Length: 444
Ligand code: ADP
Image (cartoon, rainbow, N blue to C red; front, side):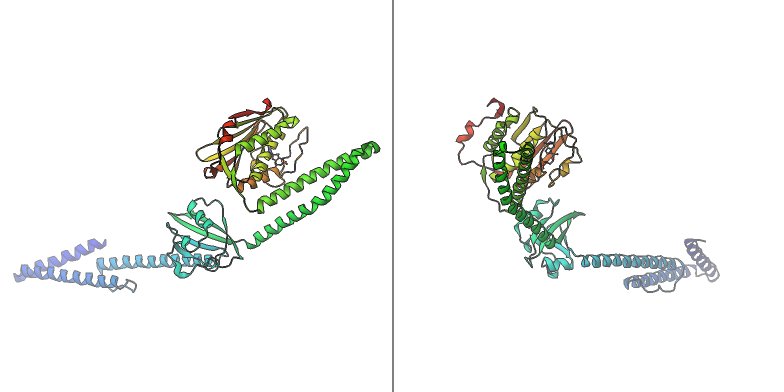
């Protein structure tokens, strides 16, 4: 029998008892009232006891009772117990998470929607100088490096920002933000002091070796030039050897020059000015076109005349490398198009060729140092593999990026995207009036 049926049955039996007693004594109504009153008092007593039990947390064993009240007590008690178990489990998980993040060697800070600190681990307190009491404070008010504030504001967290530790300038940190959940972000700061130190040592080593190699190379080239001048007096074997030695020293000289240029691009302070890019491109294209092999191959299109803030020497190296690659890696008579134009987001220099193209798998790697694509070519194309690394570094100094698109067998397009914010006003625009919109350098 169900619990409610039992309740109704006992109520019905009580009613029957009152009916019989009422019939015998003639006091049916007072007895019915008495029964109703007794039932009411009983329910009020039960409700009162239940409320008191719940109020005290419902944790202790519930009071002895019967019927539907026993069922109610039993279910509530079970719910409470399972909730307690769940809470305990959750608490354990949170504790484990806290302990593991506390033990992390990297600093971790949970940020709210308004950059306020919600939680920070022990490393964050030691390397970022955050205190327990900083909870709720906005992090830009505590870590005040402009590059960090810019990074946080930008919303673009693809790369880390490198900063000195606010508590110890000898420690270098790579700070990165990861977004998750609704408006929450996790800030991670990793100690990269050793990595940076090793990188500096590598740069210094390459710079020193390259520098030291310059003098012996110049001496060797000088002697080899003298020997070449005395060609008449040499045997054919010796004369061939001298020619090859000279070619190899020239290759080494190029390598040393490129390595030194890369080191300069990586280490030197930026000295910027407003650069007349159309004039620079005209000059570079003319110089390349004047070389016998390239006469008539270069088309320069100047869709815009804007100047940008930058470094002339590094821009010249970048543009020259892109143009020389386009000429080098396409057939001898294939045209190369150089274009300077502006879109809504960027000012772009593109160099487009109709050469051999680059496989999609090689595109991400071509700007690595010494990366050369091995292709079976009838003619071996000379190169060291540093040209595009130079382009990449030169562009990084201008907050610009290199975009490579290519169709294998059809050609490639290398474009340098400069932020619109780099556009600057030339001092005088008298020269600009004379700069043609499009130059076919074969016309000269
Ligand atoms: P290098 O030209 O000295 O080999 P780079 O760094 O300039 O070095 O180029 C790296 C590699 O990228 C080249 O070896 C070449 O295989 C490929 N590459 C560069 N530019 C082009 C291009 N315009 N077309 C096809 N392949 C190219």
